[in-house]
Image 1 (tube, each protein chain N blue to C red):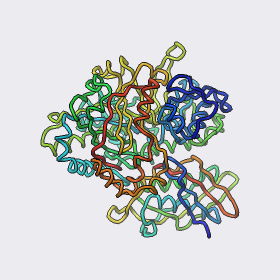
Image 2: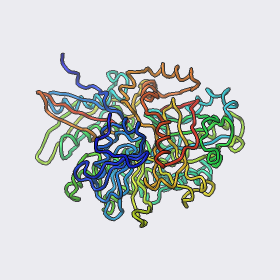
Image 3: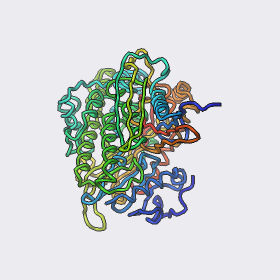
Image 4: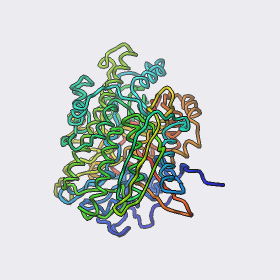
Length: 145
Length: 485
C-alpha cells in the first residue's frame, strides 16, 4: 500500500508533528503545505481559489527553506486571513543556499463557511528533518499550536 | 520513563545531574520535583536541560520546575539565569508565546449566587471574549496606537479606560516591561498583532469560572491577604499571551540568530530551537527590546480581557464591578526573560533570568510586591487542566535556590493527536457537565485535546512545588465554567 502524502504522529506530547512525503523536493514541500492546511482547516479539499499570491524565498539550506515556507503560510493566515496552498511550486538548490518560488491559491477566511481547527502559530525547527530515503523525500515538521 | 541513572537526590524535592552528564555542560542541571514527577518526566527534559547548561554565561545551574516537560530548545518549566556581561539571550528560553501568563480575579460572589446564572455567564463570556482561530480582538487599533501598547503594556489599557490603577499594582512589573522598543519589531509582527488585542487564542488558553471550597484552602492567612476570604467564593482565572504577535517576534529573531551564530558569534548550534545571541550584542539587545514589546502586548491583552469580564459580570448581575467585589488578585507571566538582581555565592549580581513555563515567585518582604502582599509573598498561579482545577501559591524565601521561580502548570503527558483519539469533544463536554463544569469551546477538536487525562496531576505538581520550597500552597480552585479557545 502506498504511503499517504502526509500523516500526523502521536508521539509528540506538545503540539502537532507530521511527516510529509514526495517524489521530488517540490512534491514534499507541497505535501507539507497540505499538512499545515489540514491542521488548520476542516475539509481543506473544499477550499476555493479566489485569491492568488506569488512567493519567493531564499534560505541557507533546504530545511530552513521549508521552515520559512511554512511560516510564510502561517503569517498569511494569521495576519491577512488567507488560507492558501501552492498551485505551482519550484524548489532548487544553489551553491549559496536553497530557493523556492511558488504560486499560492486559496481564499480569505469566511467564518460562515470555514471550520477552523488548530491555531497554528509557527512551524518550528524542533526535530525538523528533510531527507531522501528509499527513493522519496521525507520531511518531519512540528507545528506549535 | 526512568530518570537518567546519573541523577542524584540532593534533598527532598531536589535532584541534580552533574556537569559531566553531557559534554560541554558549564553548570549542573537541577530538577525540582517529587520522586513520582521525576519518574514521569520525558527523557528529553534532561537532554534539553543539559543543552541549556552549555550556554555561555549561565549562572549556578540549568533548572527544571516540577512541571517540566519537552519544549522547543529549553524544556517547558525551564529556568536559566545568564550573566548580563558574557551571557546569552535565547528565544527558546522564553517561549514563542512571549509573556503567556495567568490572571486571577476575585469576586465577592458565592457559588450559590452564581450557580443559577452559570450557563448564561459562560455563554456571555464566550460571546464577548473572542476565542479560537482567526477571531479578531475587540480593541480596534491603528499602527501608532499599537506601538503605544507595545511601549506601555497594561498601562496603555488602563489609560484608555480598560481597567483601574489598582490592576496595575497587582500585575507583575506593573504590567509594563521597561526597555520595549517597537522599532526593533518587524512590520510583519506588527501586522500580525494589530487585530489581536482582546483575544484569548486557542490551544491551552482558557477563561475559567472557579470556586474556592473551604476544603481547598491550604493557608487561610495568605488566602485572606489575597482577597480569598468568603465561603464558596467565585473567582475568575484566565490564561493567554501575546498571540501571533509574540510568535512572529520569536520566529524573526530565531531565524536571525541562526544566521549569526556560526559566523558572527562563533557559537555552535546544538539545537536550532536553542538559537541565541550574546545579550551584550546588538542582536541580543534588539531581541530583548522586541521581547519586551511582546510582553507588554500580552499584559495589555489580559488587561482588556479583564475589562470585558467586569462588564459581563456587571451586566448579568445588575451591579457595578465594585459592588460585586471584583478585584484582580494578581497577573503573572510565565514566558519571559527579565533583568533581575540575585545573590549568587554571597554577592549580588545582575542577571537575565529566562523563565519558560516558569513563574516568578518573589518571597515575603520583596520590595517589588505591592504593600498588601509584602507579608504574604507574591501570588503564584499554577493553571491545571480544565477538569482538575488550578492552584494559588505564594513565593517563599527558600525560592532563592531557583532565582525565585516556580512551576506554572501541570504539563502535558500525551500528544494532542493521541488525546483526540481517546475522547470526542462532544462526549467530554457531556462528561464535564455531569460533573458540574459547564464548557463553551470554539472547537470540539480543541476541547478533546485539552482533556484532563492529557495532563499531569496538578495536585502533585503543587505539592512538589511546596516540598521543594519554591512556593507554598494557598488555595486549590475548582472549575465550574470554562471558555476554551
